[in-house]
Amino acid sequence: MAKVIAKELVKRFGKVVAVDRVSFEARDGEFLVLLGPSGCGKTTTLRLIAGLETPDGGEIYIGDRLVNDLPPKDRDVAMVFQNYALYPHMKVYDNLAFPLRIRKLPREEVDKRVREVAKLLRIEELMDRYPRQLSGGQQQRVALGRALVRQPQVFLMDEPLSNLDAKLRVYMRAELKRLQRELGITTIYVTHDQAEAMTMADRVAVMNEGKIMQLADPAELYFKPANTFVAGFIGAPAMNFIDASVTVQGEEVFLDTGVFKVKLPKEISEILAKAGTPSEVIFGIRPEHVVVDRREFPNSYQVEVFVTEPLGSETIIDFKHGDVIMKAKYPGHFEAAPGDKIYIGFQHQYIHIFDKATGKAII
Image 1: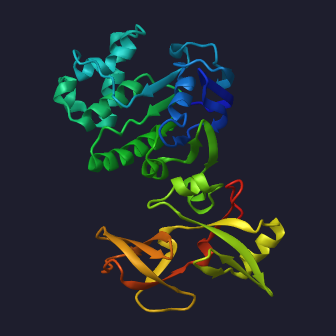
Image 2: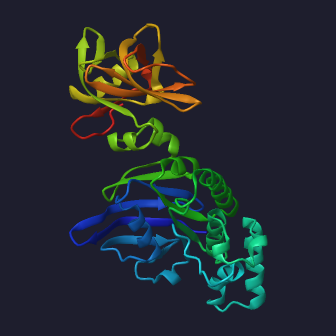
Image 3: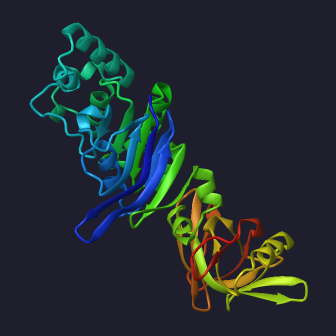
């Protein structure tokens, strides 16, 4: 196995900078996810590591080798693509064996490795079928097997689950994670699906406009986002953001949104004082940290229901106060009609405050 290091990677397509001085290290045996919206540079970064694109700047190390000038076949990596790229005229056995046959391995060694991988992926009964005779999940396993059979140092995966239906995607997430843990192969995985990233990764690099916004484990991304982009991208529904002013009345500190006036706990006030916080900030709170009730409670605000989204196990409540529309996530069923009056409050330990000018997190 091997670690992968990217140092100040740059890739341009004409005037567009697709990858802008990206640096990270995928540790030996780690499952690292590159997460971001379409066009953020995550797939290009993966292709640079694979050798399918040539960097305009920076260095790539696999293990202790600088691989910038090595062709893909000499980098000892295996790539799994979104479309699986199976050979339609070959049976499953031959698809799995092909990477070994072109390396001219002995027939006995080829057969041994193919059988081992088929057993690991539980596809032994599919060996005599053609790709067209397989379901999406089965094709995905064969594509994985073809990468595994080479026994690479590094796995590179480009949205390999995106063509599967929702139920199968959840199942295959767990299977992929189990497999990677079992084999301990360093894996770099590209996705735009935050659920995949949060459930599978050891660490996640959130990308936007060719840059890494934050690289951290899933819990840190959720509870301590570095900026408004990460805060808004991680979590479903997305975090609520409201422009606010920091005001001081005696020894008490408030966030005044013009709609809500939120009294801040002493510990947050002290952090703001030490940080020399600007007066104009962005107040952030996740929908699941908004408390909802039909009756007034301490530090609550009356609001108007805009619309409800019942999901069975929970209800998403869009509420309106003045011109501000926000979301709350209520555990269980909450019956309400547009225009109904309800009360909301905030779990103060989960309040986020961002610098309005830079978008960087203060709290």
